[in-house]
Length: 392
Image (cartoon, rainbow, N blue to C red):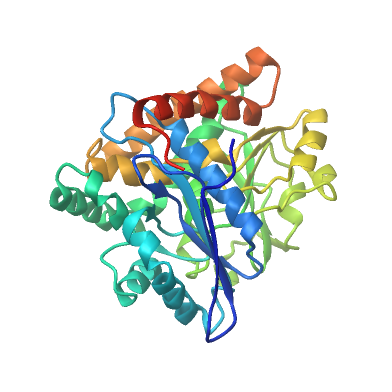
């Protein structure tokens, strides 16, 4: 794949904090990718995430759908979301990036931000919407915007549909992997890093499918129970950043160190919080059969090589966590409506087809799911370029 189309670094005149935007490529003149906020965020990190967004978009190309995949982009701000200056930095970043957001970068929440916070800051920065660049591609903009707003207003068990979409996709990836391996859901143990938007929704769907969640990690450490955690109680006790109130722990729950989730006695690990959390220094601690990347870039390449040599399969982020982005566009473009059953049904069918195809290709070629996914991306990007041209 070629170099990114655009890289921008911004310095906040008030705090000196830095922010980045990378547009990897455009399709029909538009790119898609969220905005993250975390201390230590770098331009290289944002560039990797932007490339990943190009891949996630291409993987969901369906020539019969109204939604045509966009290009990939990503934004990042080097500031902890808990910092007292964070919201002001966010608003000033958005003001600086306004020309890009208005014309060719559509974005939403990512690590460290909620969609509610993004929407509020976008309005304060003087813009119509964080996704307004895509509006010229819509057949009926008012109807599309109403449909997406209605979808975001839907709540299921106290959690918004927009928060649940990604976790539904991650869970479906896990279930497909189990089925292909001939393993029943019941008795399969799962450990997750992160109980925020993605991790929390994934935990809910996996528990509902009959899997046993034995460990979850948040900023304060790992909560574990070999007999299974009460996922719904933990979700109800979360704060805005996914931290769990320890007063809600059950009698059999234990508090362990923050890294204990990685070595949990579980068949499935779901890193759903931070990037680069599995590397060459800790890969030997993994006891699981599968690592399912709900977070962006959680497993470093050198660690994946070591894990593969031990028979641990990594399901890559560009496949696993792609449903959140796709759900936005399926809804906005009208492939699905603001309906829970329709949304979850479409996500499950799409993810089953995609994960199944990637795993089949990997098995046939004797390669990793990541390599198979990358090959599939290149095929679909060639089709998109032939149909819509190249925008660099």
